[in-house]
Each structure stands twice: as structure tokens, then as C-alpha cells.
Length: 332
Image (cartoon, rainbow, N blue to C red; front, side, top):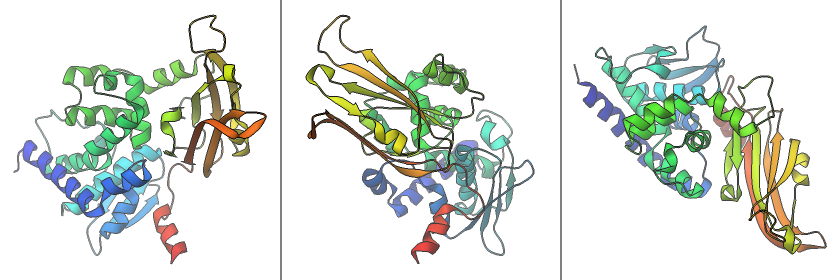
């Protein structure tokens, strides 16, 4: 039986090979965002459907033709990880597999292991969170390795990667960006606590929605989330020079503007300095679109000082045929 180390290396190597064949790094540079695992499954030649699976997360069947089923009962991040795990079984030539929640919590230190499951786990983590994608988002946000010891930054990274917080912590350890001690410290933090801190006094009826923090560093980004997600948009506003952010497009795009606050950015009492314009918005519908915010003088629409535009896809979890397949049919 292959050693655990050999199984991990096998999964990592095959994930890297698939990225090379799909030219994922080039696509990321052009489009940003995350790895489109469902499009990759289709491109590799497997069927893919989303169905209720009675407590299971995913299923891979190699015969009579390769096919993958993924649950409709879990979040998009878990659907994506499950899809990547089943894609690993397919790419690695494994026997059929029926997978439950164990794939989300499996200990890498257990003495008992199935080498095919270990290889598929390694494939999933490497495929969804390749080091070049972590570095892409870190560079965009101005994060270095020290910043990725902060759970708030790791949570925001996870949202941009389209993965769970815990999977992101473990993959940062796998990439040797953080130490085992830091990983354990990060894993001890619950995402709910991070969301509560970010929202302050704004309470939610449930804490399943994610809380995104967007700044001008997210210019041109592609945001993939779920209906009900919240967005805290932090913008520097140069009110002393007469520049104001025109935020009307937030509501025009269908978002509910929950708060619009200004906070002093410079020393207390400074006159004419910049302030933080902090918007809190929510979208309750499954929607796609673009937001284009501009900082300008109200009397001169052509004098633009600041700019934040991003695309968003808040359709959330998949059902039935994957969207990638439906889009291909429409394009044909």
C-alpha cells in the first residue's frame, strides 16, 4: 500500500498537471477570482449533476462512463470542495467512491488511512487553492505571510478562493505559508465570531451568510457568493477636496443598503482630511451583475478621483445541471 506521503504527492502532482493543461494561471491573471472546478470537471470529460444525496456529499462512478454527483444540501463552498474531491478520484483513476462529511474533517495525522481518499483530499486542496492563486489574492490585498496569521484576513481569503475557512487554514499550512501552531490557532476561531466582530451591533437572524470586506484593492474583482451575503465596502473619501462617492448604484443593482457611515481617517480633529466611507449592503436575491462606484465632485461628473467596480455572482449553490453546462448549451 502506498505511504501517506506518496498519496499526498500523487494528488498534488495531478492537480498541478491539470492546472497546467487548463492554463488556470493565465485565466486567473485575466479574469481573477477562483478556480472553476465544475467547468474543469466537464472539460476533463466527466458528467456532473447536483442532486439530493440523503446525507452524502458526493459520488464518483467510473463506469459505464465517468460521472460525478454532488449534494444540493450544502453551501457552495462545500459543493466546490466535494466536486474537487470527486474530480480527484476521476483524474487519479480510482474506483467508485461515495463520500460523506468525513472528507471535510479527515485528520491528516491518523494512522489509519485509505490512500485513494488521501490522494483525492490532496488533489482537492491543491486544485482549489493552488499556491499561485493564494499569492494572486495576497498581492491584490497587500498581504504577506504575517498578514495570513490573522483570522480576519484568512476568512477574507477563503471567500475569494471559494473555499471554507477551515480548508483554507489547512491549505496555508500545506503550502508552508503558516506554521502548525498558527494553523491550530486559526482553526480554533469560529467564522461566526469573525462575522459578529465585522458587523458590530448589526445582528443577523442567522449567521450562515458570509460577510465580505471590499476596498479599492478589489477593483476589477469577480465576487462569487450566496444570496443573503453581506458586504462591507470601505472607501477613502476626500471630502475636504469636494469629492464624494456616488453610491446610488448599490441600490440600483438590487442591494439593500443597511448602513452608510463616515469615519475619521486622519488625526482626530483634522480639517479637510480623508474619511472612511463605510457601506454595509446585502443582497437577498440570487443575482448576477456589476457595481461601478465613483468618487467625484457633485458639480463635475467627469472629474473622477476614486473608482471601485466589480462583478458579482450571488446565485449560490448549484442544482441540477451545472451552470457551466447550461452556459455551453446556450452558446452552442
